[in-house]
Length: 144
Image (cartoon, rainbow, N blue to C red; front, side, top):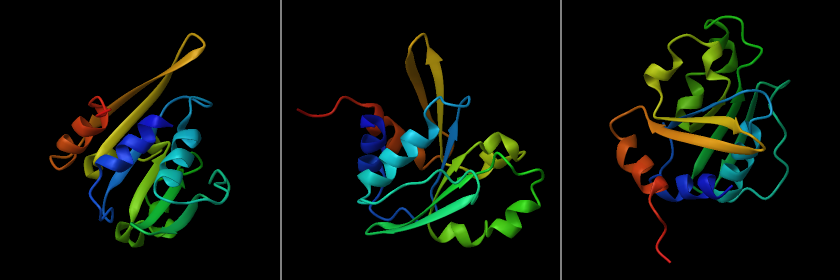
């Protein structure tokens, strides 16, 4: 949850056009991270998993966030029916991005979550040039 808040703090005030990929096994914490990300952006309501709806939009003070779950996507063509191009007007928070070939090519940030015994580990990486400073800031020690 702290990592989600730090990433939100590191993002520019205008979040439209950013794409964050959430990777990891079932139960690794993708939806938990998404909930913390949305709460850090000011959302105070429920954050249902988009497993069945596929996309949940959130209109927030810094812009719209589209939380998408691509687990049930069978082909890249299905993104058109989800309104993929329309989602560019906001920040795309994508679970199971590996279901669509080459999706990472147009993304900015990848978060890979994994198990480490009973704990979880996270690997945050920049996929675009503009994300390098954002990821660096999110991973740096906070000023206390």
